[in-house]
Image 1 (tube, one colour):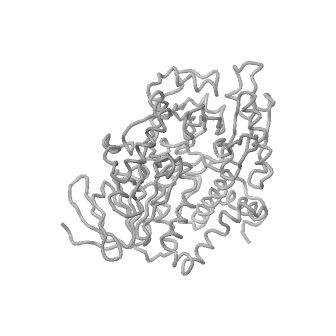
Image 2: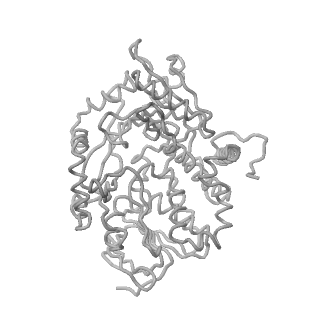
Image 3: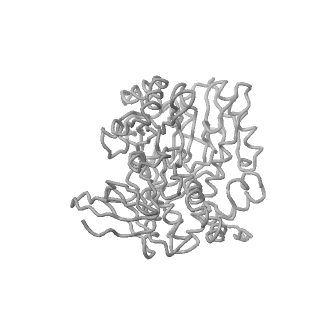
Length: 502
């Protein structure tokens, strides 16, 4: 075994999370020495791959599950507003990198695509109308349009209106300035940018086989999956950003904060259409309401996707169940994740979520014809020959201890950090990649508090002129930042006005 190498930071996984954190750290401290370790032979091979996610630039514009309705009919918009401002923070980072000139073109990873919400039934229309009324009062959603007029809907989504019953009750909202994001292209662009700097490496076909505490940091054991050779790297800080594989690695670290966490894997599938004659009639991401009893991640949507300059349509997702934690993982991932500390919460979740388990199994068992039936709720005239099944990425939802229920299943992301800030892991999935930058900023503030408020503060303020809280409340500043980001990322045409934040 080779003599231990030493770096400042080891990041496990070459997806959007690690790529974002690595580039951020390098911007804040150009002298930092870091290494990204990836099991696959390329970056963005799992959840960040463009066909493993919907590519929605999640901004709360169309996702109806971000605006729950209370029993009295009122709609809570807090989550939608927060996610919207988090996406604006992500856009600030991408704008900053694009303006540097060495990062490459933003057109490779972000495209303007309108975001629509579509509902059927009297109760759906009542909810959407109330949602629109509440959201459109907030400056982040003031451009939203609402209609119950079928002729208008036929203009907004021409693929979806023909073939519907004349008396069908429908409504829709639209926000023109939505986006489609190729998170795979973005990840690989970030990794390329990272490795152009000194003391920054990305190493592929490498598996982390051990994490041991050492004086003030961690010794990371890394095995080459091709040669079988093992080496050890000493790091002051370790980030576990390996998607579904983050949980087993977090457990291997043995940190106190990892106790009690479990994981519930959920797989996904899409129907995909590449027929240009069909694709050209749908230029939007259209989200609707999830079926009763289905998980939030299964909200059906029909999406324009822009991957490598080519447009396709995706419909889904169709949920599924497998015991793998990664698409390229092992069926032993789930059983091997069971520990004395998490078996209680995991059993409680299994007992309390039998309906969800049955739903996932039924989704897996669906025939192609049944999947097409779901699609025809959106696109009544869909033809079977235009669509094929695409297996999506694997998500591992978090199971946490709960004093009342024993354990709860959480559909969101969770940052778990060691008390001394020497190790952190990101667990969970949604809304995922769109808000990566906010999550990584939270990690920096949690694990590098002295530097974040000290020597890195000026650079952070330069990259991020406005963070989430102020964007949520300051309408004029929000509009200025949003307009600047949209011009910098070539989502709108630049006007004669200044591009400056000042």
